[in-house]
Image (cartoon, rainbow, N blue to C red; front, side, top):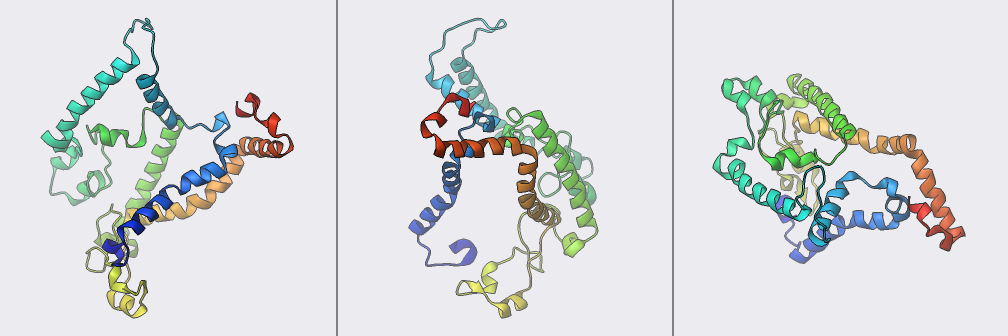
Length: 272
């Protein structure tokens, strides 16, 4: 808060408590709604399964057996992949960092501005069939965990956003053509990072300073992201009711059964 807003009064303890409060907000909602979104097994998302498998590999004893010709145990397989990942990590992240953001398409013609805008991975849109050899980047969306329908949905959404961003940028909508196409930073009218402290007095917006300093400017990608957020938040409620009303209704009826028959609610049928 001192870095971005110049609030010198903010102590380290205040910032730690604020971070803990905001980060544990989700746990609080999950606890309040646990009978609707936690207890029913139909609500389990696949991303939780690797954690369970990891703990099982570390803690559960395993009998050696032959499965489709494989006799390796989970623990030994975890050891091999862990050591291999550690050794490989040094190549894209230290030895040859170009493997991390593999912008080979921009190497074809480094002076081509439009090529860098469309295919560049650093400040461009990264339209590249072979963008990286860094597993930290490959696994950002958990491709081995999330089901295919979710991956396909993300891919379609990414392509739609790509064309929207290109249209916004090359039409110079709200002066986005003067900035980099893809950045979550906010800029002033000189192209430098927008200094929020320049428009604030005593923690509040100062209209005179704002008019003197100017409004913030967003990149094309940032505008599309904010527009998508405004569309997603209300649509999320509509989609949930439309698509998962059956599960939601079962959870709500189960919650009513809890008040009517607390002992009978705690049965396996309510969590299957």
